[in-house]
Image 1 (cartoon, rainbow, N blue to C red):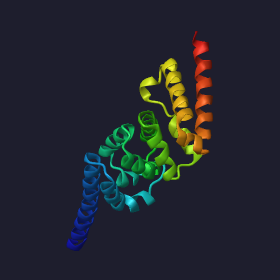
Image 2 (image 1 turned 180 degrees about the vertical axis):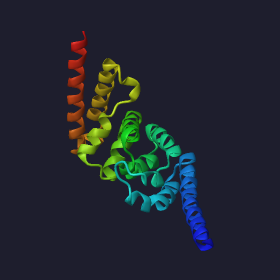
Image 3 (image 1 turned 90 degrees about the horizontal axis):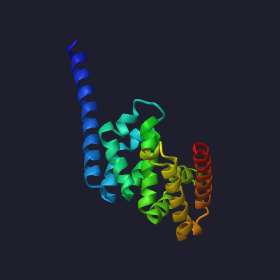
Image 4 (image 1 turned 30 degrees about the vertical axis):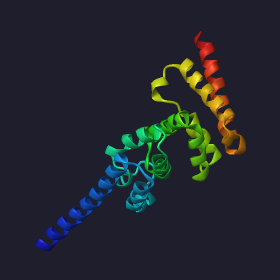
Length: 193
């Protein structure tokens, strides 16, 4: 009986210690994102990412709740290491958290379109995924189709003016997706009038 209690204690302590290491590494990363802290974070959570999937409780082992919003805020501000981490942990997110990640990448595009496009190409983001990320709009515009349309049009202009987008075939899908989105919003606005 004592052996079972001792083993149970060691198991719980060992699991807790592992989670403490992950939390500490996440904390260091979000406080000071850099290439070095990104590598340390990915080393700490790499095996946890492998077990991630839609709706799995194990997702929290890779991306603990307290650090998700910090990560999304960093991505929205145009932080490259945070964007790379976001791309790698995407399969560990679902529901609202996945939506928040996508919306933050759209805001990253708004802040720094060329850096966003360069990093997306370097990271091997598919043309379809790029279109999805650039088309994701902030929640603050959810009930405002006029502002949504304005932002979509601004993103179209940024893509059309970007030499990286011109040189990359990837951007074609994103442009098409944004143009379709703009047309749907135009139709919705006309119906409201």
